Length: 236
Image (cartoon, rainbow, N blue to C red; front, side, top):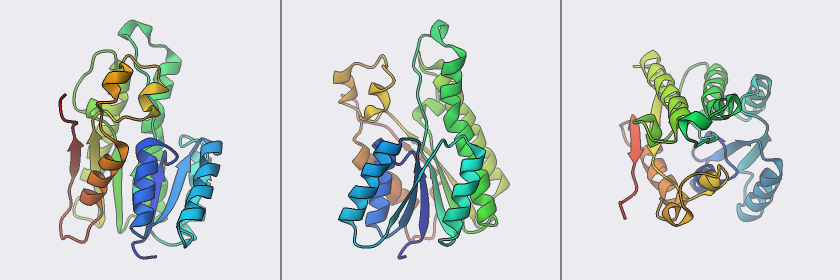
């Protein structure tokens, strides 16, 4: 394997799909994780038909299921040392402050819970050595947005966890990168029945272009580490 083994959660659509595709194109073996079984079947067929070698392994399950994370890491570790973990999976809920329910809170917190579980299990599998972790969040982790109060709260929690990991592994061979993208033109907003009008959403960033910027900063042969990646769309 030219560049090693990467794990990408939320790999079956949107930004996760583009990150997975581009990593495979760069010679990585990607272990993709997603809860959407039908989408993962299509992904396996697509990548098996497009790439010569066996560069993709799919794992279907809930990122917040600790047993699933443990089982998956055991299988992935059998393939070799994991070099890169990209925590990309998450679910939105955008409502007025008085419209939120407990189920909305649980939905938004899935990204944080999954991020923690996959970091813990991957760090254990790697013996806390030679690993880069990229936690994909949102610019909502850097400010408060109207009608995104619970989503922002979850993303601020992910940012706090990311910063704590940086402090814990400072000076080690484990590096931690916070990724903060703005609005992306994917089904993420459409599936949430969000307040963002469709015409405005089409002014958001393209997932493939965003993935290129992230990976350019994240995986390279330079003697440096980009600790935070924030990408904003151009105003229109």
